[in-house]
Length: 124
Image (tube, rainbow, N blue to C red; front, side):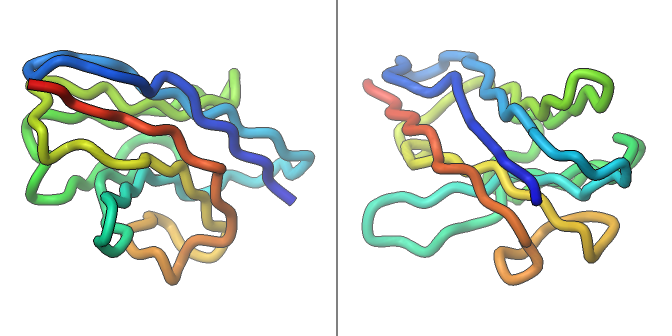
């Protein structure tokens, strides 16, 4: 069992650079593939960023590539999403997800665990 708790969201101005965190609680000793997804009102949940078991590989959705950076600190059990150059279209609930079945997590169907989400609202 894995428990995920996101934090760091809120109201941000256009161009802002907040950092989201996801605290990972688990008794498992094995690593998990981790990722960030987001869901805007009236839209499907979409892939934002993913990181491999030990942080060596990262992937990004086209809409955030070059602006967001995913990282993880396995020793502290924390996943991060550094966001920059925020735009109004980045407004969404951001979810942390984990999977024990695959090496890198890029689709919602492959996630085994989800956090409750944190709202990011970008105001102009």
